[in-house]
Length: 108
Image 1 (cartoon, helix red, strand yellow):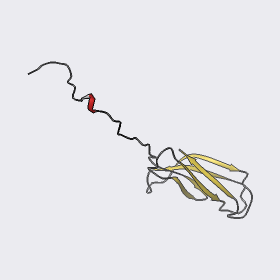
Image 2 (tube, helix red, strand yellow):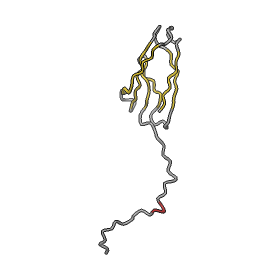
Image 3 (tube, one colour):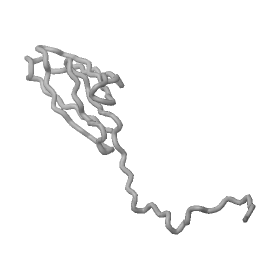
Image 4 (cartoon, one colour):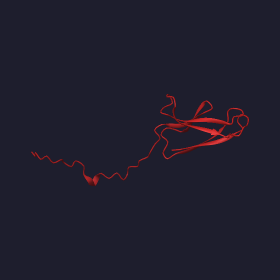
């Protein structure tokens, strides 16, 4: 029986290579924008990162010159989206509903 206070090496270093393991970053939550009364999910949960998504948008109201979009994230479909940032758009071309078009791109 050994009473040595030295720790025993339980891991053999020649068999612990992790070269076969691949690590992937995933989005832990969904990210989107709140616009004209609705939430548009841009990046879904568990999306591989880095990620970039673009959505085409059109004005929902007649003759608006500016609007505020809110960038949000949501942990699950059952939870309300949490505000991350506000983006104010100025200089939107004045037009009837659905005529002014723009693109929103989100990169993570």
